[in-house]
Amino acid sequence: MQKSASILPKFMSGTITQSLFFLNVISIVGDIVGLPTSYYYNFVLEEKFGFNKLTKKLFIIDTLKSAALRIVFVTPILAGFLKILDHFGESFIVYMCVFVLALQLIGMTIFPILIQPLFNKFTPLEDGELKTAIENLAAQQKFPLNKLYVIDGSKRSSHSNAYFTGLPWSKQIVLYDTLIEQSSVEETVAVVAHEIGHWKLSHLVQMLTYIQAHMFFVFSMFSAFINNHSLYSSFGFTTTQPAMIGFMLFNDIFEPVESVMKFAQNLLSRKNEYEADAFAKEQGYSDNLSVALIKMLSENLSTMDADWLYSSYHHSHPILSERLNALGYVSKKKIA
Image (tube, rainbow, N blue to C red; front, side):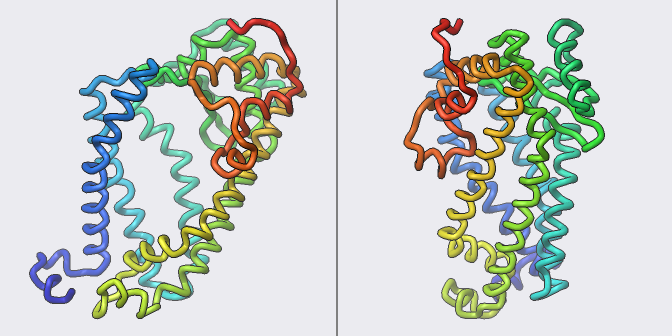
């Protein structure tokens, strides 16, 4: 290891620099290896069912943008991760959790402002019945709505969605143009009511708290591996013990436990989805939300039913039949 490191340029003599170079190379190689699969998914599978709106040019541009953004943003994050490990040693756990929390909050702030506009165009929702209805709902619930945007999701896919972003005191609601096209005003407002329910019931705070507890547990377990000489030597690292290599090996060993953690996270997510649906129902949007869900899943060709245990483990959202039962929706009306 030392012999090979000696032929590297002087600026790459540090362990952290070498680790970052290694990870970026692995990431780029992974992108190249995954290109055929990604191409097949978009231009064969999605195309077959009428979802793909990507051109080959846009596909290449998106791939290059994603790779560039990963290098620009992820590299300094990994550098910070490695620096904390190097500086604090075995007492890194609390500092690392604070670092991860800070990254989450910063990411939530800059993603809708700096990153997503590189891929999608945001247009203010035009004045009209839909905008007025959403603003009235936000005012009624004291939701700190700052701006209403429509995103050109149809540029890449015919799938539909809606979400909100922003700081606690200034929120932006983003609607996919496909959602507006597929749903009536009342149905779109019902979907927004569901999203506001997540905010009203502090689901984001719950998920952030869970993630922090998850990270604390992961880093606590990793602290038992970080100086495990036999682990490194088993994979040929006899003279040096790069922390990033140790973390990668630890992730493979930790995978069975991570599966349990994933199940717990999905249980929390599913609980929150039921509660957000119940919130929308309390506001009088039960039928409209039900119809909107049916339309979205029909248009997206999503799975409408599955074994309850399989769904609990693999799905972060309840399946359609479960959500409709919880909403108490019973209708013989034909869905347009």
